Amino acid sequence: MRVSSLGRLIGTAVVGGLGVALMAVWYAEISGQPWWSPVTVAPFGLAVLLLAAAVWLFRSDLDGRIALRVPLTTVVGMLVFGSFGVFVAFDLLSTVTDVRSTLVVLHFVSVGGAVGVLVGLFAAKQATTIRTLRTREVSLRRSRDEYQDLFDGIGDTVLVHDTDGVIIAANDTAHDRLGYDAGQLVGRRIDVVENGSVDETDADDADSGDEADVDDRPTADRLVYETVHTTADGDTIPVEVSATFIRYDGAPAVLSVARDIAQRRASERELERKRDQLRALNRVLRHDIRNDMQIVLGLGRLLHDHVDDEGEEYLRTIIDTGEHVVELTRSSRDLARTVAGETELPLESVSLADTLQAEIDRRQEAFGHATISLEGDVPDVNVQANDLLASVFRNLLNNAIQHSDRDEPEVEVTADITRGDHTAIVRVADNGPGIVADRQETVFGKGEKGIESEGTGLGLYLVQSLIDHYGGEVWIEDNEPRGTVVVVELPIAEE
Image (cartoon, rainbow, N blue to C red; front, top):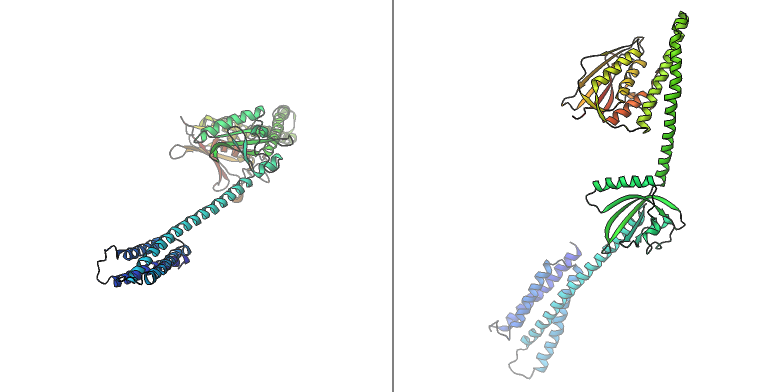
């Protein structure tokens, strides 16, 4: 049993016992007189009061030690007043006849007990209130300390300023990052730290970001923008600020959380530099190398009538290699458009049948030694893609032929739509050596190619990038009895 419950039980027993004992003595003393007489009723009233106090004490939530104060003050009151009653009854009134001394003492005891129990109950309740307030104070102090630790532990700069722009709170990170001693930021104006200047690019980005933020949030009490913070030494730090309207100390204020984006800016500049390099490489591939190889191929084809049978084989190798280089420039161009962001790639409605048939015809012409067959009819649907969908089919067909270990590769293409008419599925099956199971998920990685492959390692990576952009899927299955099936699933365009 808990101490608090035990204390209440002891207090209840003592107070109730005093009430019962007082009533027993009173009953014996009145000896047949009317109990409601003003001369005799006072002790009975105290006994009832003590019993009621005992019941209240038992049902209360007082702490045990505090509950013991009630019987203590009751006993003290009864003893003090009872002692005085004994002095009055047996000393001052000793010469008076017909005085019932015991009844006089009971009256004094009754008054003392009433005073004691009321004082005890009041004192216990006050002590409980004080203890509750102290507990709440400790809890509030702990919560405040936890809040302060959380406030100071945030890795971003946190400032709170009032509606006049005066900083009223700042975390440790703000002081450290801005070069101020602890407490020096409070009282300064926010525009001393945040001068609001953004470059033109940042302003555009911030505007567009704010619009998106306003649309997404349920209320218009939050603003996200990019600006710069000025340190105590005059240096500037690019930051992204999230400002929220709050109430601080009962007054409206603005909570400003600023994240240092210097590293992000540096990464963006480095990314843009690499994109510029890739665009330059793409121009070289598209113009210089491709044009030169077109000249080589043109001259090579003119040599057909000028070489003997022995030279014909070497000439075929030269032409095949040249065509492979031209194909590489096409894949690199498409990859640059997809990965480097050279141009926007909006999605549009593209005819699946026309695109697939056209690319099959071109690949059949380019690879005369291979057989490319289209089994069945292609569904007359439009898919969600763009003009680079042809590059997807071109690279899949090239991959099926170039990776083949047969002198005359065979490729079978089928197309269908899924149940519900939500997606279209194209399967490109070959009779080559196949792909082992542990490489089927990694073969779409950049630079992945077979050991004996004549490919560039970019084709399937480009396919994966484009299909992801279209919102589709691509995967590999085993063909029977040998070979590989590449499956492309494309979303059907909405009408």
